[in-house]
Amino acid sequence: MRSFLFVPAIRPERFAKALASGADAVIVDLEDAVGEADKEEARRHVADAVAAFGAASTRVLLRINGFGTPWFEGDLALLARDGIDSMDGIDGIVLPKAENPSFLEAVARATAKPVLPIIESALGVWQVLEVAKMPGVERLVFGSVDFELDLDCCGSWDALLYARSRIVLASRVAGLLPPVDGVTVALDDMDQLASDSSNARGLGFGGKLCIHPKQIPLVNAAFSPSEGDLAQAREVVDAFARAGGGAVSVNGRMVDLPVLLKAQRQLAMVRKQPVGRD
Image 1 (cartoon, rainbow, N blue to C red):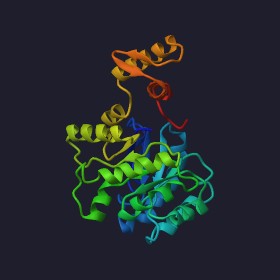
Image 2 (cartoon, rainbow, N blue to C red):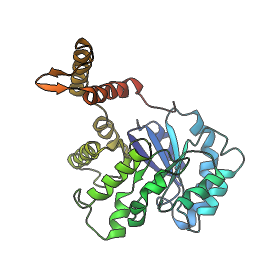
Image 3 (cartoon, one colour):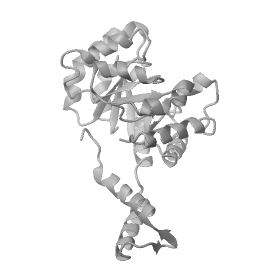
């Protein structure tokens, strides 16, 4: 999955549009997008929409409120409610402020669904490998905006490079899918979105959070091999086969086993798209 689109849980009239947006996954948000007075109503909207989510081809994730907030236990009660945990409508849980393995243990007691922890604080980045290794964790997410707030630093790529690199490395060490990068808040700056997506992909991220449907096509393209990449990958695979498994030169570049494996991975990625619940 490359693109993850947020939709507020308090706005059920937007659910269908989000599911039809072309995003690989939709994150129904009970946290930041819902005011304190509207938390219970937002939960009711989620419960009412579970059947519709289950009928959609897009993967649906639910971002709950963080551990220790006044709404965490209520969100867990929603997950444990008869029908919610057993139905296919909610495919995974997005857990904000994931700083400690005990936070994930609390979620696991309420649901067996996979968890995508958001790493968005100094403590979260410091303990990211412990979080990544917890049973049930599917993929890490970088909450870049909240991380910037926690450190009171600027949000430039250089300033957040260490945190991003640590999340990518922890994901690999823990055997998880490549992590999901944070949002680009400049809605109308497609150049910035392209740069952010390209940098994230180059660092080892496998997808990106989106806050508007118009960001999805560019994000999907950035985290997919280009036609040029695929043509080169086919050349590598073909040349390696002709060489009988030995190292070979392709367009002046030496191709050995690691290069072959990367080429095969790119071709396999395309064969698996489009990505849905499967």
